[in-house]
Length: 201
Image 1 (cartoon, rainbow, N blue to C red):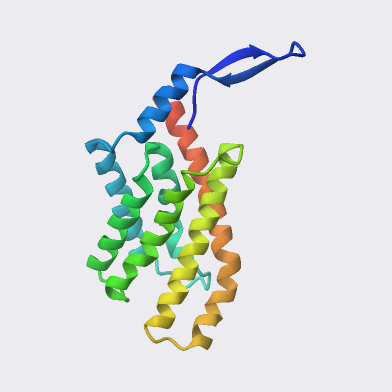
Image 2 (cartoon, rainbow, N blue to C red):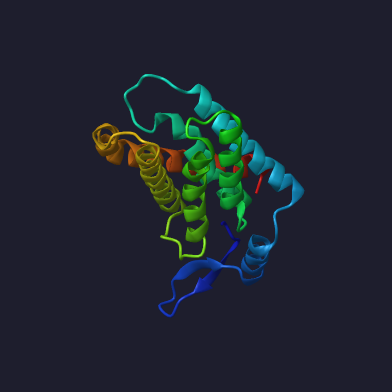
């Protein structure tokens, strides 16, 4: 969240920037307000595009997690742009339902693969930020990717895949998924900045 800044003098006489009280209060009020119709439509569109691309992006790259690039990107960017509680959870639920309708290999259980990372990111909104916004987006991307990797591996075991087969992609995924999540977080940060600049805010 970006607030208006005001200049203040410290005890040493130096000038620092601080969050303006009214702007911060208004930002917190908007954050707690329910999703509007336009925001709901936007998040729905993000979720649908993410799953649609995932269904089409089945390249033989031998890179675990590559087909989830768009979903992780929008999962970080969407709630950041809307900046309201419930945005990430809503995106995850819509994406999970759409994945099942689109013909998921694991049926209804596949909803968990999309919902769990979203629910976790929703919980992070109640935690203090880590400093620079780009760092927050990177951490969100990495965590979302790792959770998705863990859930996907668990679902593979539950649905009957042999442990040795699951482990073949599990260990490489511990490297590729965080890298993909980190890249998605950085892209989401710069996209958010570009959108704000375009809107003149």
